[in-house]
Image 1 (cartoon, rainbow, N blue to C red):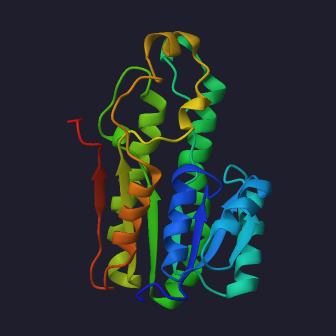
Image 2: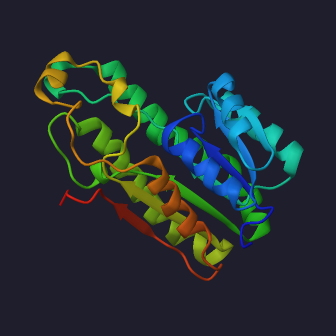
Length: 243
């Protein structure tokens, strides 16, 4: 009952990790706002939730789209208690192959998109003297590998951002900030990859250990269900079998 009637905004809620998080928070009684570019997919998710949910079209790479969606959220609820920044892209590529537009889009979505959403919720959370921002980062922000330079850099930025946000926002405004850092998860993120050489080098169709989106949703629920005086700073989650 700790989350009953809390307003929770989940970006990237149309599939994968975001969808699983939305389902978990809805089951706990949150007033859900599902945000994504695909209204059709969001409507399908909306039908699967335990409780009614608001749907907003939001392209986190576009400032006007983000501010417009949050205006609708304020008009409907007047507050946001939980923001989960789950929208992300993962077009892995070798630096030598110069996929510069994909690199820039990775930063646009994974870093700037997160900042846009944080910017929108801060005024209300500061006034409320309460709120919880959950940033979905990645183990790739800590453990780099060939082909993951830009994606890893984007997630390292989210981890560093989360740490500094806690320093600034928690003591003065009672705003909690959590970085969730998943290992490999069974989602369609790798479908963003267009670097043929990288795809030839790496067998993504193999039977490597993978987490399920529900496991990340469980981690988010653990973090946001703690009492106000407890901040879960970081959660690093890997599938059993990976060191």
